[in-house]
Image (tube, rainbow, N blue to C red; front, side, top):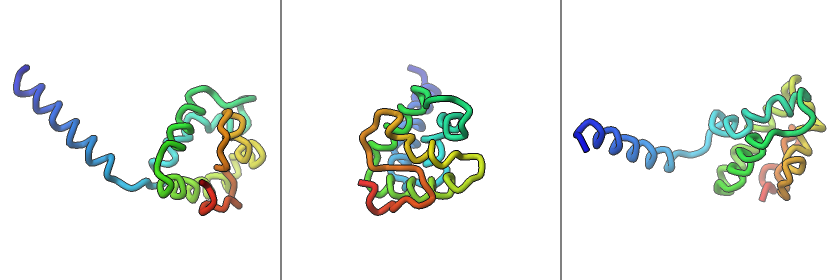
Length: 112
């Protein structure tokens, strides 16, 4: 392996480790539902598989990260583009048995 390739692999490992140590922010939280926007806006009849898989990944995050995402999603749910009834039942429509909902009225402390 040449030095350039070794350097690239090392940098990728370092950046990956740094990312693992970062706290969730709203930009990261939104990335978990970006594939879901057509569904949440009522443009598709059901959530796509990438949408549900991404949200399932969010549910594998720490409780603190999930609560942060929940707070971010409260603002998303308040957007006029998002259909409140669709957003509320979205996790259930992905087949996820979670108490996590996307609603401007979510109690994010009881997500788990």
